[in-house]
Length: 401
Image (cartoon, rainbow, N blue to C red; front, side, top):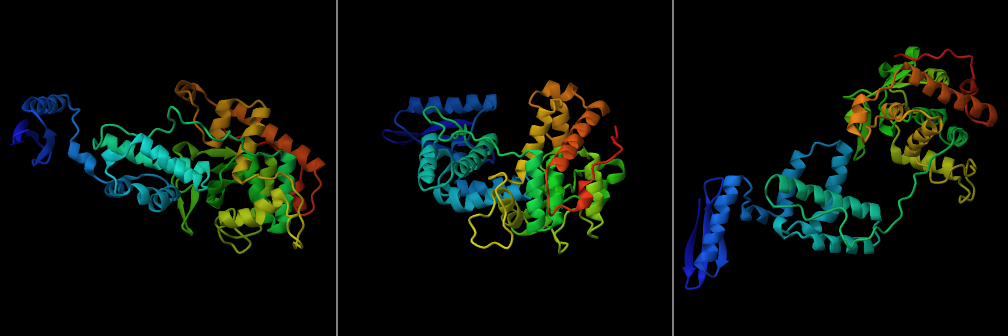
């Protein structure tokens, strides 16, 4: 129900019934016909089910953020990132702004100013993405008619070239692991080698437990419920891996079965990868103490306890996952087998549904990974990797279909 009312000699308003039974109004019509036409449009849009209450958009972004955060269903570390961006960047600028008053050009100007203050493009992009998600959900809840924020706009140039992720060859991985064994200990080197030869993520490996490590069958199980270790605000918790597809079974090459067997015999923790103190490794500490000096070298230090030479500057732990993917491509492993191993989903829904990876392809993949290790460990001199890890066979390939 909607109708027009005269408010003064040249002023009309439209009254309408809101969903909660109260009355709303839209003021500022100079003539009765204009008010009547608007009232009719309300009635028409309500019949079509497309009407949006103009007063809904007066909700401020800060008010909307309470409901939005309460409805989030994302990983704990992702939610922590969103809350931090809201607190420190988004709400200071947009918190007191009504949802309906946020404009495309206004957000673009804000992003430009933030970038000019020295923030990285990736950070600015993430801030804008979070704001866009909030407004997209406000649109779905019929608070505003459309999301004013788009990731790319006409007249907006991309400022940086997409850089290729740093990846490493098997030889470089082994040399980095050798440095790491000297810097931190063999447990850290075992973690790196396992990451490179399985493609598993940091959280998946740090959350891996003995009961999900089936060395007799050459398998690692990434559990759908507790298959990843999450570190949020300094606290650890077990939870689901990154995506539903990330819950998977990873077949191990024979050398890695032997390596992990020796590694597990060196400690009694229920988790496969722990520090020398039987504690969960912290990613920031691992990067500072292991990845950076092992990959980049430490020539910038005057008198380090252990001198390391550059092997693959810029390589991150996640770069081992990129390395694994690259090796599979080089070995002509079909894309479906790659995606199943890495916990990915093919872009094409039909290919995803109708492609399968059987024992023959799995055996070919394991053979290729084993060959890479055997050739690498034969030709790459190491000093700190345990001799028991250097075994080259003979092995019996164990591929479970």
